[in-house]
Image 1 (cartoon, one colour):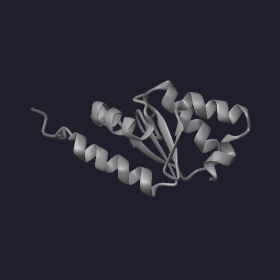
Image 2 (cartoon, helix red, strand yellow; image 1 turned 30 degrees about the vertical axis):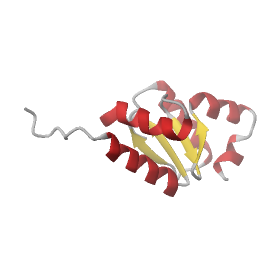
Image 3 (cartoon, helix red, strand yellow; image 1 turned 60 degrees about the vertical axis):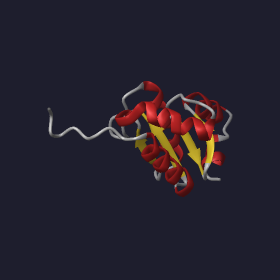
Image 4 (cartoon, helix red, strand yellow; image 1 turned 180 degrees about the vertical axis):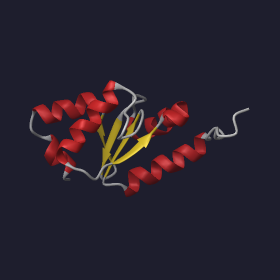
Length: 113
């Protein structure tokens, strides 16, 4: 057994983390990978769109407990898809919605709310 592997996170642990981050972060992006190495194109796109307008975004790599994060996030957004962005506690959307807001010149306003 690999001693460097971490024990699997419980749904309750992930729910508590998600709740806290959504409540306390101005902008939080739940994504696959991290800001230095996004692990999917949609996460990369979402991060690029957000960081075009602001540098202070909290990112959370959901890959360590993907099923638990999907369930915990669905409670807040009604969606299981990743990535998901929240601003001031409100669900904004995934990369598709962020891109639409950017194309309509509305994303900077949403991110400064």
